[in-house]
Image 1 (cartoon, rainbow, N blue to C red):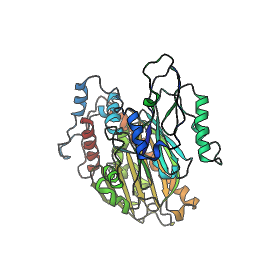
Image 2: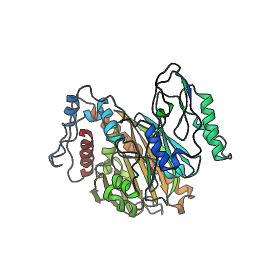
Image 3: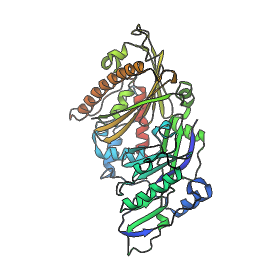
Image 4: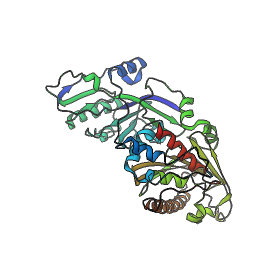
Length: 440
């Protein structure tokens, strides 16, 4: 069940040139009462989503977008043109209209289960840190023009009282940076070298609230400024917006918070982020050719695909071949859920792993794998090691395939391809959703 935490903070990037200071925040935190939250919202300007350098001319964008027609049935449709996978301007458009809107998976709840826990991340041009303050999840976005706060100071003395840690964190930041400094309650505490500036109100340059939520074991953020931060989304709202009618199937399929986190692995791949997604969504088309070891344990004739609003679920029965030594990583059925635009959940046997695909450029992406295991096996080191070795082998095979596809997309001999209608429905669904978002 989603827990909605409507206290997400976003730093506003400002140029700095002299010195001003703010009084210490009120002991009644801005984050802990609705009235003070509303006051905070009134005193801070709520900007539109950042304008990105997309296309130099509207006609160029229209040309690239309209080279794919989602209304054509899959049996007759062409795949999106190679420019969708190679053009830097197209990626900028995707960031603005896809990644900076709606709910995005950014981490998992076990990363912030205790006070002082935090994790950092980057989505496009947005760098963020998510941390747990008492029982509230907070998110703070650091603009690239501003020196980074000393996050390490936040965790240096874990035995200290939590409030003392917060104060030390703020004080050390004040002493250690010549740029603008913000308190953890969102107030601007200090702005340096702004002597001579006119009509400057320090209360107008604090942090701006956005939204953060959790569903099951996952932490989600929403950077869509068109949705008022004062609107309190309930559990069902986030669930419906992120998962739609697939939520019950995923919950009943064993995707929940009962599993134990094991480890993370990251892969930097020389391919557009969509190439990795396309490979995932081809209905097992590539599996018998690229993953012969994995294919030997699957009953590929049972492969099925179901599409929902913004989710597609592929599933496949698992055979008994190869389990003579009682090593059973896959169980009896594998479920592969793709949550638009870039998050994948794989549930098989006692395992769940997730794949978060982050664009690093038009021809490069990072994929973060997080592995979870049923609690009864979390101390079985031999089983875990062998399972991860098998998984690593599959990832290396996929990386080789994806990077080869990206090289092919750069060839002047290629523009668009065709779909395999009986297996690549989820891929077509993904492209249609992407087109829908990009033309809005």
